Length: 355
Image 1 (cartoon, rainbow, N blue to C red):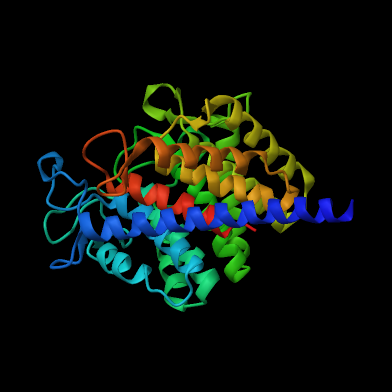
Image 2 (image 1 turned 90 degrees about the horizontal axis):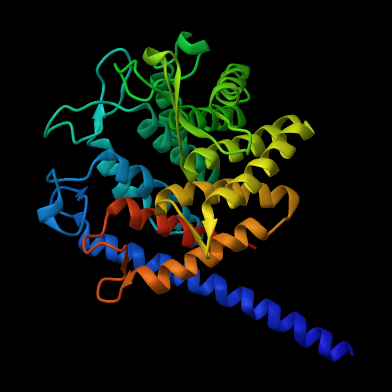
């Protein structure tokens, strides 16, 4: 009897190890593919897709690097001693635009053309930098995160009751994708510094987003339109719910107030019902990577594996069904986007690191 029990345990553990190895190998293959097909060593910049004819600019929009910088941080966590972040940070530096009212990152390479600055693009970079700070304690990541916070707050006003706009100089829309990551950035800064101002900002944005953009099923709408009588754009995407899920878990950790954990569990259940069908999350690769961040945060608190397991099933299906065997890149289209490769790299690296 005891022998059979131990054999069962050994089988389960070996299966878990195999999953971790597969995920790590897949992340490594994607990293190598990005370096080979989407990186330009001469300029230190990345390109948008693997097909130059489909690229509207010589180099990638900042959004792709928002995904890649987080993936690079997860890869460094998975492989201590490797420097995956360094080339990505150097590329991001070329998007830095110090114009008033506060320095921030433009949506395109500044030396090639001045472009708009998006609050969410900056927030994603800030989140990755603060994750890197938590892991490495390198002060430069904390300083950059605080600088991005200052830029982010230039997008706040009390129109429509509060909240952050999506893009600098554009007063037409306030989005979950600029408020959810804004909450996370403020909470990360609070965790790093214990300055109450950051927690106050997080709670202010949290209350506004829940009031205006959460639907009854625990999924978040895309935006509110202040100049259109506060019309709601009711589109739903996995990343919007993912940031709010993770924000609730962080607030639970900080305050130990049980309503935040309960809300996180309701959001997780809502996302599975809304987005998961036939073993796949029906949204883009990178949007699903952001949702996984929330699932993992919740799993560490309540040890309910069903959401993480669903994401593992999804990740396996993507590798089996969407991979180009020649390049090891992922996607249904012939051209493979930087954003998507980075999103799946993050998913595989995070799943590989899961105990």
